[in-house]
Image (cartoon, rainbow, N blue to C red):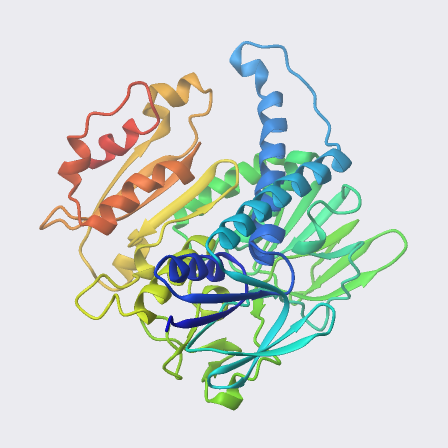
Length: 453
């Protein structure tokens, strides 16, 4: 008899687990309460990137004079943007749903909870309850924006990220709380649309977990855009009046604006699922997993944001695939485990930021000897042709072996270019392999070879 897979959560992790398990002969049931494709993916990632693309198009129009054109002024049409985002979401959801159905995956719109180690209770949106037997359970319920007790979120003037795709109206002056990846993307997005923006930075640099050189390039761009940075300030209260919204900081400073946007992390969706009752260990609401994404109950796995690992859609998809393969016995012998340290990530600001593998600062912090080479895009013919020479390529390698350990890119199309370094890191390639690759000229990718030389 085929292995019975029951997956709770239809985001990138759940979808990939479902399609891989079905392809390998399993009987699969997928339970999703909101949108097949994942709320975090289709309600957060995709809309934000669509808005960033629109803001980027507006920025390029303003730069037209530098390309030998007459400058063009463009204004955002939020209703048209809202329609565009909905169309993208619907198309992606339809594509994912069609693939799952073509593979024989049973889809249930509703919620799921464990009522026993091998039993999942599904409750549909119509209130119909069914207990489904399971040989393997995959938990992939994602996360939601964190809202502190001092934040009176109303979805109108005090916003979470999910209220902002796009918001009801364009903020005249947006105060962004949180300078991590999500926060800086929203700063870029709304400054491109024409909002005045103030960013509250709890540390002494934006993107505190990133390379200081990378953060410096982004801060410089923000300042040129007129973004006000409040560094070393931690928000602790929000006051709303008819005219303004004010964010009080722990050092006494106050940021005033028309709207406030909270970008201060997320919390896992693990409540009410019966996890602890069947013996699953939790840590701060996240499911504790091993290198195979297996929980403390052998046949129950967790993936995506719920696993407490890197909260990236790409990572979640790979986790889902690895889970299905492991549960169906494909990893009985030697195989490559999922290595989170080799996952590429990107920040869709302008300029884009991307990195992978070992960071220069982290290597120095632990006393590891590395070789760091850096090439600015100002030396790239293609960057000059594009009239955008901002940023650089940095490659970190082992000085003894020449093996590529990591890299950072700041500049146009960094999210695409980092794939080359990610492949090198994953495959254990050496800098000589990059340096001796014959690439297209002129192209931004040439900077990769130059940095490897």
